[in-house]
Length: 433
Image 1 (cartoon, rainbow, N blue to C red):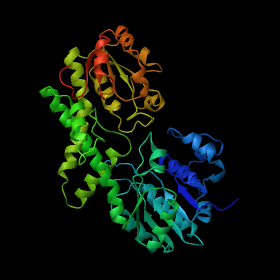
Image 2 (image 1 turned 90 degrees about the vertical axis):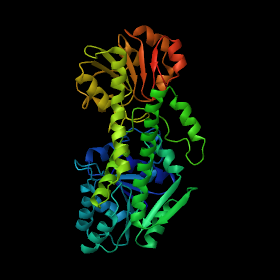
Image 3 (image 1 turned 90 degrees about the horizontal axis):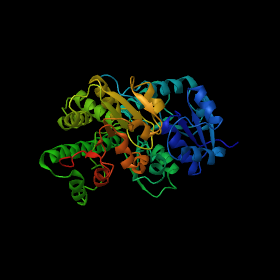
Image 4 (image 1 turned 45 degrees about the vertical axis):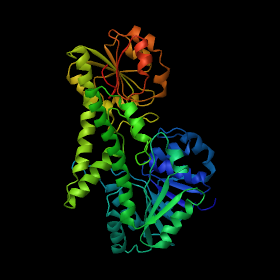
């Protein structure tokens, strides 16, 4: 077997997507993870993450991909190792870099590589992390290990396409040759390669996610004003998006952003600024608007039903977005918790995230069929924009409900069709119901 060129440290969502896409580009890939059960499952063809198309891609590239739990094995076989470990948010709002430093510790235990090994940091790390890792590598006698910042810009649900058709690839390096080694792996892609220094590359990732989160919170604020003035935020957003300076993306009003990236990265950038002595007022507002937006649905339900005590509320969708089973920072968590605290009976349906939700949403009754979930309900809330919801027979939904109230938390369904079906439709920022 030929020696793989590329190593992947961490067989999570980012690691597996990165690994299989690099294999698609023709590279041999070795994936390493500390979870022996996960590695054995991958060897046997079991995919541990939910991402459209990844199972087929892993099978298609099986001859190019190998899996190991031995870090020394990866170091011996790879010339570039992409670090794809978790950097979760701590209670202080900082990024937890424990897994990153564990990689450095393992490198020291292996004694480094016989030839130059380049660490390419895919994990989202605070600005300045690369300089600290570089200094620590040098202190431990690992000067022959290169370091490159190569942040990922993958969205759950479209990750394979995002990797293969990127807007840009960002590469920040201390030494140009190390950056060249990483850039060469992306050569088959038709995209712009942004070559820069390490701190700038790290900041590009944070700044990009913070800006997108700001757009979401901004349009949600506009939606809230629209509700008070009778304007329709969907029309407003369309008119705004036609301006080339603004663009249409991330201007869809709803009940807030969630997931593994935006909440963590926005908080981390805010914390980074604070640790540096700068008060990032705009990000404080972005975070506050997003948290309040999740709770506005409860107010809408109270407006229509009065007290929620004893009422049956059906949540359609649990994952933070469609085409993923990711429940991290999902709006459904806050919404279900608030409804339960008001004494409501909460039902929930999701085609992918029920198993993940069971351990998080205690007291919620889960359904495999959306029509069964709405049967006898006092109100239905669209929480996640799953394609299955567009196919729902709305007239039957209305007939099955005890009170035909539909709160569309994603402005996903057609208001006219819902009302024609006999539902009282209330969206986000779409004027009076």
